[in-house]
Image (cartoon, rainbow, N blue to C red; front, side, top):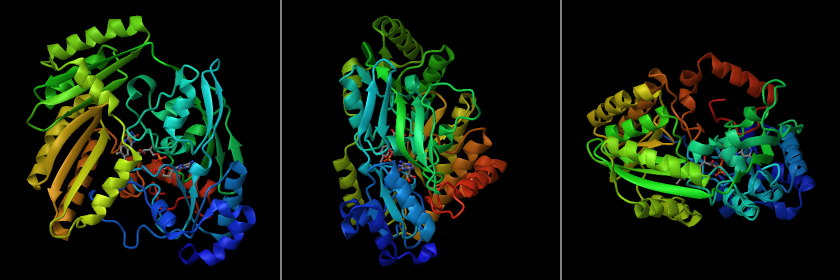
Length: 467
Ligand SMILES: Cc1cc2nc3c(=O)[nH]c(=O)nc-3n(C[C@H](O)[C@H](O)[C@H](O)COP(=O)(O)OP(=O)(O)OC[C@H]3O[C@@H](n4cnc5c(N)ncnc54)[C@H](O)[C@@H]3O)c2cc1C
């Protein structure tokens, strides 16, 4: 069957043969919800016509065998499969480009085992980060991964985008915390990697599926490192006269080897900005490091605005599912970019060598402003090399939308040209697929060869990652 022709009546009987009826969703409201993620139309993108496509069905697998059975059906029929975790991805990774079977991984949401002695937790891939963390807390442990979307995003989705959380400075991206994975390949073959922190037996296979956005295999179970709940946390907030001042402070912190668990800084191009720093761990460690960091901030003209401000930031750092739904409703009521009265609000997250960051900020600010695009804020997350920018522009006509789309591409390519990467945290999805050849050079053909080898019929999340 050609993927374009997938029709529910051709696919459903096969799904019903392998799953109970309550695990197959066909109602329009669920399908509409599961056809998309948080790639919002207000971003600078020309969404292809007809996207998102209505899924032929959504399924809620109960275990790895269910996933293997669904992939077998899809492979036989040539129907695309799109994995859906929390649906919080920002790049269209979970967007349905064609009528597909959506694997709603939240059907597999159990925490399977916690070992305080081994400092590990094993969970199904559809488990929500906050739920895994809550289970760990009862054992005096926690996850090292804490993104904005912690109450909604799943462990499988986070690994598939190589997500980075607020505590990334201390614990790294989620993939740094993965000990082992269970993955189902499109053929139905199940791979179980050994859940150990180090192994020198060839390339570590679990890393192949990290950041792979579901195009190479479906992650069904995950073993993650668990960390002791910190004895002490110190939160600081400093106001800097400019982005450049805050950047210098962050740069010096890292040059000295101080790695705050939290570093979050934002400033408009010609204004002052606030940096939040968080240190956690053993009391002695935090008591030694936090004052040193504060002294460095003061040296770079940072003004201490008080622990209360920092604590308020920390307490409100997550986004809720209700907020996301409200934003989506609001957006649907607004004119689409390119229509009269519309505007684009976009944000980029590039990584650069620290020595190129300030140059990049100045060149991009000029690039955007020359096209009538307002730079709302430059930001740092985690450390001096992870840079973000939030921009906005009125887009009353398609030509104006095009101006923003092109400017964003130029900014991403400038990051590549300065020795950086076009995205450090949210993945590629469909959003940046057109720049993958430029990002990876000959490496993209190696990735495509891998995709062909593992997924010869191209059923797994086609069109994502430029593969
Ligand atoms: C307001 C907001 C704030 C955000 N803040 C952060 C942040 O602080 N840090 C950060 O890193 N990200 C952030 N994001 C992005 C998003 O939360 C992350 O990308 C998150 O890791 C995605 O998890 P998910 O479960 O929602 O995955 P989904 O969006 O459902 O899926 C993401 C990708 O993974 C694939 N996938 C999902 N599950 C599986 C699986 N089991 N096996 C194989 N492939 C799978 C999907 O097909 C898709 O390609 C933010 C998003 C929003 C809307």
